[in-house]
Length: 129
Image (cartoon, rainbow, N blue to C red):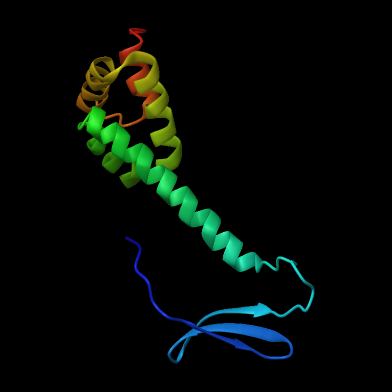
């Protein structure tokens, strides 16, 4: 069940504030137009980032459940400054294409060669070596 709490809406002639006690949670421009949706760009940017992080987390969880060795690839790759989102997406494509056992073998070989990157995993998984 979601956490519920009482908040206060304070409406002035130009702005509407949503507060929790003394803490201002949000401030929006006020409009008297009925049905008008007013969005603050910075709130939308935060929402987009939260959704991106949630999606990334779901992908990482799926990979780690299927191939626990994946976690080490992600740790090593991010330690080298790689883009975690791009690596996760590439490994998910390999998981979908080759399955967990083939992906595991490719990951183990890539880690043994100290190349924690999807391209190294792909070479091992697809048998191109």
